[in-house]
Length: 415
Image (cartoon, rainbow, N blue to C red; front, side, top):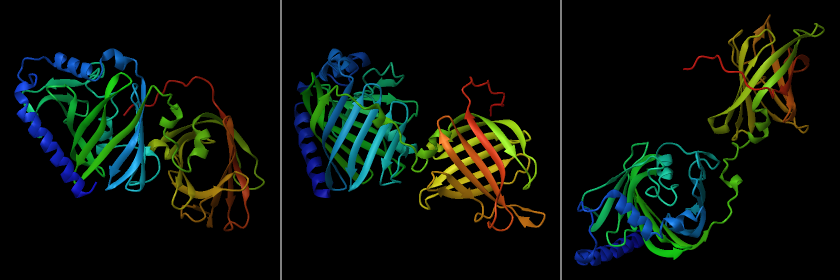
């Protein structure tokens, strides 16, 4: 929003403040200690339509325009009583999609990375202030919040009722109600300026009836040196929401490796040189997602029962997969990189990574091939070349079959 618009909106609020201050003697009591916290919140809920009307609402879809970076663009906001929240918007010509699935917050923010990732830090604190349905003062005890009724307060020069909300993160948050209508007029809360914590002020205005309740049709937010303005055009009550829309997609490039996640029984077959007899053993493997799905980590056993770790990742800039492997017998980290071929096999090699080991005067280049990937299992082939990649021999084969048995209780010590 440009400076002229900001000045106009602030001037408009000053006029409202002046009118309210002049009418102050006519307003209901506010912050004089004559009302209890429960009475104030009951009046707020009544002003917003009443508890019964809100209990009949489980979801909302709000649409309109959002002005950011001096540009206006459409937005859609989907909300649910269970904490689901999905804001689709374009801010300054860049897509910003903010999602809370009821437990975890993630976004696709083209001001940051442009691919789905977990929200952390100051950004997380800010989004957590938005997901309560319809705000944290409704059912605050059930949510475990600590709400305090403040002594006489004002909000930008106008009389107000102040309610401090205490959350587990301990960050300050104050809601301001109009002492005459008991509707929300503002909020002071944590904000974020590209991950840097900054205070934010939110203004609520233009309440209108919809579906038996009152909703603000104009919401302004100020933080750092910027302002955003939401102007609501329509609100749908109890629309169906697609659960899949709230699920964080896999990290780009990693979705094809999702079937690897789980517990596996492994048949290990290895030989040490061409023509040598094959040795076999039964092994185990557990593969889990880390870093929000940006890394798969495998903990496995080798032919001789040693413990090993293997990680799978995708370099979205180089468009290459990388696999790193280390086991307790050698403690040497090997890194391979590669891509899927036209047969849908992931083929990786350490020929150019600088980690190929030297034994008896020769450099042992390894090639790892992941194939036959399905929900029930997959195959890992390990080939070795001693002549720079001109010739290869099959040195190892690991056949993975999904382990459907109940997981044994871990005996690994807890850190």
